[in-house]
Image 1 (cartoon, protein in one colour):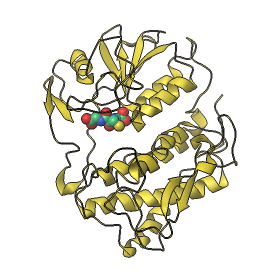
Image 2 (cartoon, protein in one colour):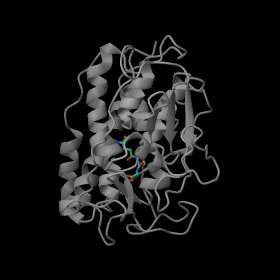
Image 3 (cartoon, helix red, strand yellow):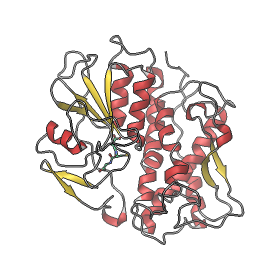
Image 4 (spheres, helix red, strand yellow):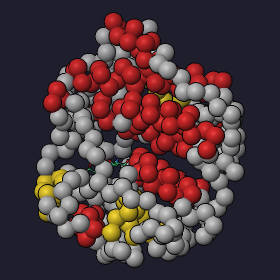
Length: 350
Ligand SMILES: N[C@@H](CCC(=O)N[C@@H](CS)C(=O)NCC(=O)O)C(=O)O
């Protein structure tokens, strides 16, 4: 891992935490949009997306590129799955799509081309403009909004995952899911103190309860049809078993009164295009509380059988942190009861 300092790559320790051992996500630097009459006008073939398949944030943008049928409109590069000392790179490997636009061997070269004095983290996804030779945007939440509508009329498939009547509700769901879950798994996984870890894990599990309750009365997060909020949740949920439960130690307390581990339940995986059992369909997976009865507490070690490589240490969290204490059940209940987004008329993608 590393970062850019005034246009030069510098190797540094992974996931450097801030005061109190808390993980803090830096602000994203490139925040433009694509709109007619602006520096970045909508044009087929003009823009290029850089992603890593490992990354939940980049995964969102890949989903939207596909949902909107933009495969022929926006070209794509996929980094090597392993982030080396030089950061994301295009070394030959399974699934790698080399950089045919800038010919970069490592992604920081792309950032340096956009801004020779760039300082900050070199992250995916990146939406690149071939015409100006610059980065339009490297914030996934904004890139998916761009893909959702900017190419309508010039080759995008129909569909609106951020429909006007549902925006307030989608924003409210996104806000909680981002803070406690999308980013919450990082706050737990990279915490360096017990306090910071619990600050992340308690609201995280409360949000999972809240989502479970919400999806027990409606098929999608904001009503009868999938919206952006569902896709933003999906890319985190789908990584729970593979990454967050073991590698990031996002696990519930040993307290039997607390919910069990969250799992992606194989029987809930519907065939592509099939509506499954009527719940949690956009995720192709169910949010289930799975009490792992009879299994020893696994805190501090990856789940047996999880992952394909040798057991690894959690990315940043010091060994020996323990599950939230029983007294925190009250906190979980309090978070679970946190304000519901406003009800809104259900409108599906059109
Ligand atoms: N705010 C960004 C975050 C993207 C992000 O953190 N991507 C990770 C991969 S999952 C990354 O590239 N990290 C490299 C680093 O931090 O050095 C977004 O949502 O687009």
